[in-house]
Length: 353
Ligand code: OSB
Ligand code: MG
Image (cartoon, protein in one colour):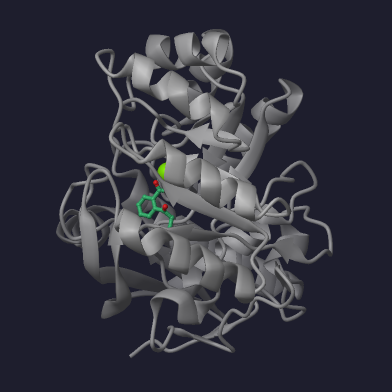
């Protein structure tokens, strides 16, 4: 197929509730939707997941817009492709900027799935099964219990709690004990350091199914030490930025479980390589979220359908963050699961203006 058009559409929405992490309180979310159109008029959609400022990763909405408009779109325009894997090679001459690359690369994968007349999840080798949902409670401690109760009432079976060295461990332990059927994850967003290592050990007794990214993204040795000294599995999120990072995690025994974020990994091609590497090395995986809109979530659902991705990811319904999502129908959680769309490509129509 031949790429005949590439358009960007910026989205700005307020979150229903502030999202509080060890790094930042998010109240508003901007994102860029990407639409690629081929010479036959078939359209594929992607979403750029960088935030407005570089608090979580280096890229921003403005840096991505610049790189997309000035560099990536000119490289891809009018090119004839026989596989979406060729996009990564076309972008090889551009350093970094993985979220910008991923947004347009993902749109090309959607386009190819539509040209083949199959859902994206089938196109990438996934299996037809309901995807287990998961919600994140990122609020002040005095609001945590109420939000966990609400999440349980809404059918979620996996709940991720944001933690930091000063978290009230007794309250957390009580909460986990109160809901024995719920799988609780803890996410520190790198809030611990060598100095607070001992405090991390105290989280071992709470009953979390995993602890996500206790230390900074480059702290491979500290993560390896935590893995050696703790019974709770250590899960890496921010550290996994490339296939090379995935290999490093394995070589340094820096964790048991990994979070996949396609934007951070530069798109589908490298993400599929990472999945294969982790599978071959017995690292469990799940698909992480970044408070995205529905286009990114739709790609993430297709990723989560791969046979080796078994842990529940960051998949809440569209209404969890947004008054109105950018896709139709919106994503719905029913009895703790999300049904894969049977439509072609990402399986949702996109409000692109
Ligand atoms: O660390 O997983 C993270 C949101 C923004 C930035 C980083 C993270 C998050 C989340 C997931 O915790 C939120 C979601 O469900 O999309
Ligand atoms: Mg995380």
